[in-house]
Image (cartoon, rainbow, N blue to C red; front, side, top):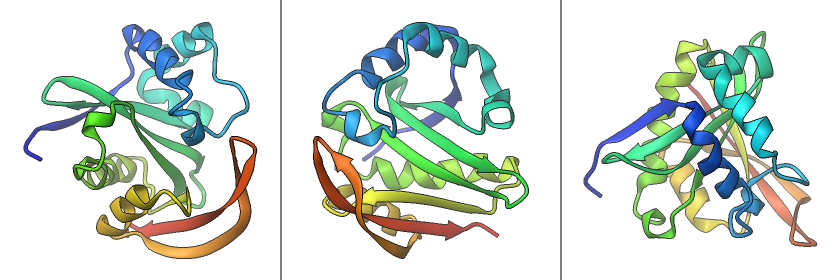
Length: 168
């Protein structure tokens, strides 16, 4: 797992890549919406740049590994008063999964979160997503709750595991 990870702010030319990833049926379970955003919505979102977290309560970064874009990391449900946000990672290319990138990306994202005075990050992960649970655990996240029938994945409700990490 050698390589240089760079998390970069969305650029207008990323809109089509995001559109393809957001519409990929294999990646849809990681999304928390019924319908993926349109290309026009993504183009507008990409123009927000580094202001998106304050303006929309969410921000995505492209994950580049050795110059190749392999996915996104997102902070969402941002609450500046409570200094917390949700975090989500999508590694779009299967050849990059289960290689330890998730843990490294989580640790890199902590620095970004702290620039926004975020001191607590959380995620809800499907209980059967063992690789994601392992990545969060290796990055120092602790299980904080078990949510029964929380996630509807392809018409089947599954339990969600709430994990969190205090950065302070």
